[in-house]
Image (tube, rainbow, N blue to C red; front, side, top):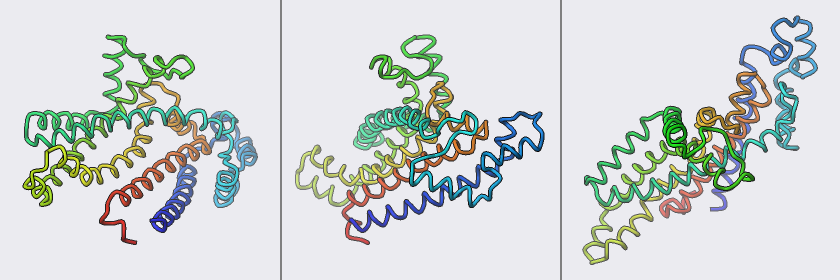
Length: 315
């Protein structure tokens, strides 16, 4: 197990290095220059070239990348924003907790609803509950998150007044107000993965309940509760992997959700940096999201190996 974890960690590091290089190159392929944005469209070519020289944008890409990645790895320094001139690391430390909180709340909601719903659907296969759960799941994967967010603002904030229409309320302003500002974004973000995980749980448990050892357990007179408990140990193995990967995907979808609810999180910083061609900010945010995604993938692989006895002994 230790060898497996060490090998997967090493592979993840290689993936991150390759991803950082791709991110760096792709940001430079975007037409336009940050110097031109800073100086305005009326700037002369000499002024643009002079500012690019001061910003280091005139150096070869390999030199720029080597300097950037060494600062990130050795000092945790992502550089300074071309637009604001502020340290990007401090901006990430300010906005990342907001996005993490929304994603974690959406993930907890997803697990609390999806897993029990999938279990009940499997136990009452082709029954009324199963059909209702299937309809809910189809609606969950079909409704766009941004549209659902807008409808929740109209119904839950404008008409009913239960939640704020947008923005982020810090915890220092009260736990109740803080949670109220997170409910609608987290629900909009988590509903899609709730549908996915609930159907995954249902199909996996149905398959396990049809295995020979479950039939043998029924023939021996074991109670239904004990049979379901044994079946869940195997049925939840693929669900754990899918759930772990969902965390990484949620960070990507948070870009849309934070924009809809006017939340100044990490994903919204990425969107603003894209419009302003703020190279360093784009690189930093995308790299952080990539680290989260690769970390979620690594956790999924380790959990799958730890929970699945059929692959524990393999190399």
